[in-house]
Structure formats: C-alpha cells, structure tokens
Image: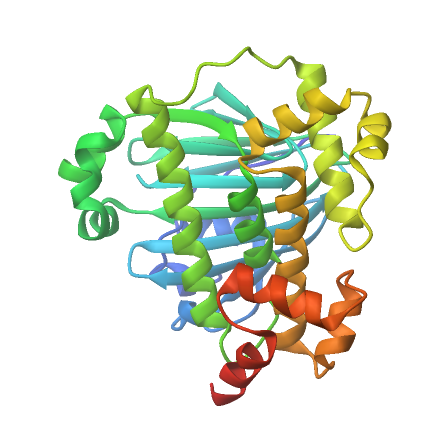
Length: 349
C-alpha cells in the first residue's frame, strides 16, 4: 500500500496555523504530523511531532538553531511503503542519513537516492513539490540542516567564491535553481550527526545543538568545496559491494565500540581483506578505524558525563577502558579538557 497525501491544499487548517511562522510548510506538517510537545512560539526549545500517516511510528523534532538555520532530526519506522509530498519554499538542505534508505524527487522527477550513511544536498526553487519515497520496513534515523539564503549570506558570504556555482548564486543573490548532490558520510559528520540525534535533555542542550549543527554544516561545506575545486583526490572508484562492506564495518563499530573487533576479525566479518578495509575506510569516512572507534567512545563518555551521576571510573569502564587514567588521557586528547573538568563545567552551567 502506498500512502500518498496531498499537501497542495491552499486553505490552511486551524491545526496548521500555529506552525505558519516556521521555515517549513505548515500545511504539509498538518497533513503528515501532529505536534505532541513544544511551543510553536519558541522553536528554539524544540517542537516534537509524531507521524499520522499509515504504518509509521516514531518522531521528528524541529529546532531553530538561529534565524534561517533549522535542525530536523527523525527516528521513524515505516511499516508501509510511503510517498510523502511536501510543497516547500526555497532553502538549502543537508540530509544526513544514519539508517534507512529513500529516494528524493521534485515535481515527480526523481533526483537521487539517499542511502545508508550518505549525505544528500538539495537546493530547489520556491514552491516546488518534493517527493520522498520510502519502502516498507525502512527505519529512518536522520538529521537534516535547513538553511535559507539570508542566513547563509550573513554567516558565509566570505565562502561564496569557492562554493559550487549554483550554491554561490543562492547565497549571494537568493537565486534558487535546482542543485542536488550526494557525498559519503565522513566520520566527523557521522559523530556530530549522532550527537544531534541522540541529544538528551540537559541544561546545556540548546548550546550543544547549536555547536554540533554548526560543526556539521562546516564539515559538509568543506566536502562540497573540495569537490567543486577539484582538490578531492582522484582514486579508483569503489564498487557497490565495497561500499556495502564498508557500511557493514561501520555499523559493527557503532554497535561494538566498547569492545571493538580486531582489524582481522572486522575484515573477515565483512568480506574484505585487511589492507583494503583500512585504506578504503579512511578514504570514504575520513579517518582510521581506530580513530572512528575512539570518537564513538568519547561521544558516549561525554553524554554520560552530561546526563548521569556515574563516577569517572564507572564511565571509563562503560566506554571500554580498564583503567580510568587511560580514559582520562584519551578524553583530554580528544576534547582538550579532563573528564573531571568537563563535569565541573557542566555543573556550573
């Protein structure tokens, strides 16, 4: 069964009206999602929505990071194949897919496929109909950054000369033509996106979201600029099987980072030889397997410091360190501050 809902209605319902001030289509929200928490007058604190279309469970949360810059996170299980049609205003969107697949189209023309562990970059003219096609059984875990031209001009005007030409015109003059591109989800992007998706309530949550969303935007713009300038290193193309194996390897590291497998065991489990796995992993994800595992450990450690009263020794053990002194050294190397000092800073806030 395909659940396709018409969002082209020009009469805004009373249910949609509270969202009209946000940088998203209020009629589409009213047709597909129900607001379950948050104040539309304070989107900086987050608005949480639940899907109301058939066969979907989970949530999306919209947070205004600053005027013209919004964060949308989603964790939705699709039990039925679904086509979501959204009439949208012109904006530049960066969609980070941590799990699940879907296809994107504009005005019924397919543009690209957003697969597991990829980034989709999309710009389109004002008032177009965007289609999101999702198959039954997909579990979407995603982060999307939504930027309007005014925000980009205010914050990134100095970068316009090195951006892809279509994006340059959008930032400089507000001219929105169609631009779409997918890039691999590099390790730094993945870690920042995971922190945004998993951010727990805390006194410093808003500050953390702003920092991580800005970091994610910078990392993605850097990748786009490398592509546009031709500075991206020419290397042999990895085939679809290689990419599948690499994604499997990363999935296992994300599950087992506390007690990670050896390179030999990881390579054997995904069907690549060790040399190819190590080289291709760094090429695609931007860091070594060891560094990626360390980043996951440090992300979890910081979250435990922020959200629990566990001792430093307990946290060290929970993220895979036998000795708290080794953990403290690794934490300081990663964040520039000791775990104790990080906790003291959180208490002061």
